[in-house]
Amino acid sequence: MYLLCFRHCVYMMAKISPDPLEFIFEEQHEFGKKALRLYDRVKVISQRDDWAKKLKSAKFGGSEEYLPLQAADLLAYECQKKIRNLRYHANVSERKSMERLADNRRVGFVAYVEEALMTVKNQMREGGFANMLDYLRVDP
Image 1 (cartoon, rainbow, N blue to C red):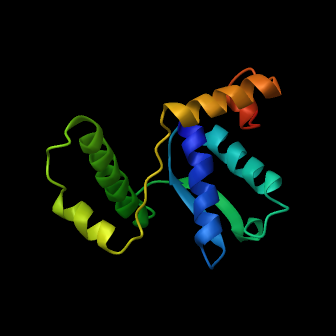
Image 2: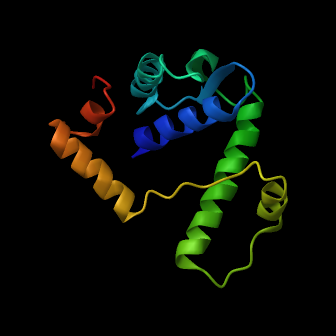
């Protein structure tokens, strides 16, 4: 699921950004190599799309070296809290920090609800893909 979300995020950022994008991701030993291969695959399969030329480099680093990763971590935390509250604690008021982020309309959510995941599952079955990595065309 991490890689499915990753692919969607890269696509959405490239589609809406007016400028070329260079991605720096927090180092994650479990997913790092697969994520870089997925990023390269997204670049290849998007060649025919107008936003593909915006995808430049991708690399991994630590938040000590790349301070904007600290802001990204905070944003990810706030979004995760909002989604958790919507799902499990609907009566909890929205956090002030999330209200401020949502005010500028730069934060959005995509829910991979059961229907969307069933679509992915059906596409995997119809395409003969054995697992998510095959579906996303990333070598393990």
